[in-house]
Image 1 (cartoon, rainbow, N blue to C red):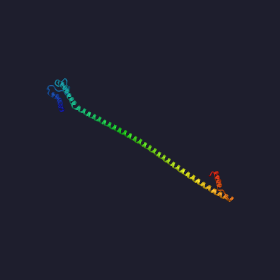
Image 2: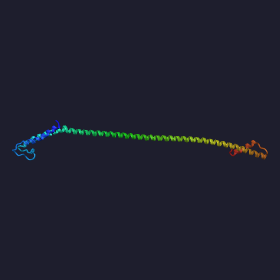
Image 3: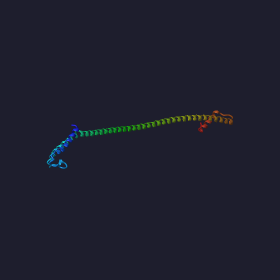
Image 4: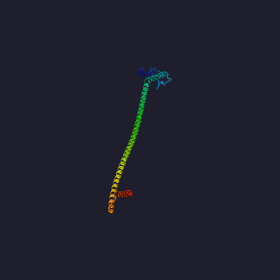
Length: 203
C-alpha cells in the first residue's frame, strides 16, 4: 500500500463521521460543539462507537505509515549520520596517530642528530688534541736535538778555544822564559801551562 493510498484512506475515515451526522434526520436538533461528546443525544450519540473504531483504524494506519515509510527513513538518516561521525572519528584518530608517530620520529631523529653531532665534536676534539700533542712532541724533540747540537758545537768551540789558549799561553811562556834564561824547554813549558790551566779549571 502506497503512502498516497494510506493518506486518502485516512482522510476518508475522518470524513465518514461528518457524512453520517449530515445524514441524520432533522427531527432532533443537533448538539452544538463537538458531536462526538454528545453521549445522551438520540441521534448523534450513536456515532460514538463508530468514532472510536475509526480512531483506532486511523491510528493504526498512521502507525503503519510511520513505521513503514517515515521511521525507517529517519532511522536510516540517523544511522548514516552515526556512521559518518564514527568514520570522521576514526579518521581523526588515525590522523592523530600519524601525527604522534611523525612527532616521535622527528624527536628520535633530532636526538640522533644531536648525539651524532656531540660524537663528531668529541672525535674532532680528541683528534685535535692528539695532533697538538704529536706536534708538541715533535717540536720538543726537534728543539732537544737542536739544543744538543748547539751544546756539541759550543763544547767543540770551547775545546778549540782552550786548545788555542793553551798554545798561545805556551808560546808566551816559552818566549818569556827564553828571554829571562836565554833558553826554554818547550815540553816543560807546555806541561807547566797545562797544569796551571787544569788548576784553574780551564784545561
